[in-house]
Figure (cartoon, rainbow, N blue to C red):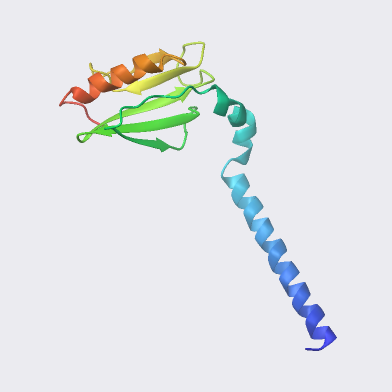
Length: 135
């Protein structure tokens, strides 16, 4: 390989890397990278309490949307309950961070303060015991 061919190859590789980096930046921006800053996800990773879901439940964490910072789908015996954490009171009107689950035993939404995870799990258990619960 001549010196010119070698330099040409190095330039081609550098251009490919720059194009890949540009594609990654566009992808990052399209996925809402700034959301991490605006919702302070790094701070919330230490503020969100542990939720002691029952071991027999199938719990799936799903991406946050519509103002929630975390969401779960809890399934048991083909019944599903949706749970989310509204840390900034963007969805409801509690004035403080809260969990919301739906449907509760009456088929409605039910809210719990951030640290009321025991009460949240108990309400989910009651809801999953009903045969009429729909996802």
